[in-house]
Image (cartoon, rainbow, N blue to C red; front, top):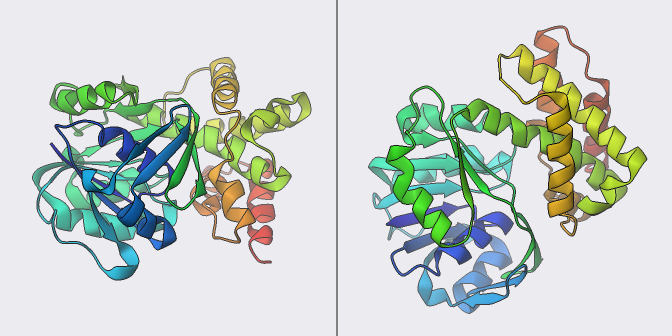
Length: 311
């Protein structure tokens, strides 16, 4: 199987490293900056939950800053988009170039709206709703810290690929240890991840804390209230979510499983980069306004994160 990973940052590089351990995979990575240069020259080094290296000969690579490698044009059977939310639309264009009529596309990027954008490009019959709860951050270019073991979640909405048509991919993900989980309710799948992100990312970014530190009682209570504001919006949109008690338990479990993880928004704020707040808490506020619903905590966090990135 030929697999392309576009936007190979932290999570994308981790997924690529694990898939590269399988001899049955031909792998293509598309990344940018010093990280991409290191992947091209030195390969991938993974630390943390597992410690292993992948030589650069195990994959083809394209460095965004130097142009797109054409070797996978029209060849990719499965395309993962793992970039920051703001880069998804550009990478969907690149995915179109790499795809063939039977290619399947998965967008693992955080936030709302990506599933719909991918469906416009490829048709919903080729787009698999997907999220991941693996925790990873970059220690330095080319070196990924696998900080929390989670899952790659795949699901089904209306006309999207069926479980049976995804069996080969599910088996590959299982074989390389990425823990695939299937969910027949794809909208639940996407929203459940968004609710986790809105509860963790901005608060970790503002406080400078790792995920596990958010389990402190008062901070955790705030995370819960932010999440439940978002859950009310999801239910107004007709999404079938778990009950609030199960959502809270899931949030606690994710924080425990990724306790050593520095969330991506914290890393972005520290490096002065644009965050994904527009696709997370700010998107919750925007969608809530359609129903005349107030989401004050999400609105406050959106404003605070935006103010941090101005300096």
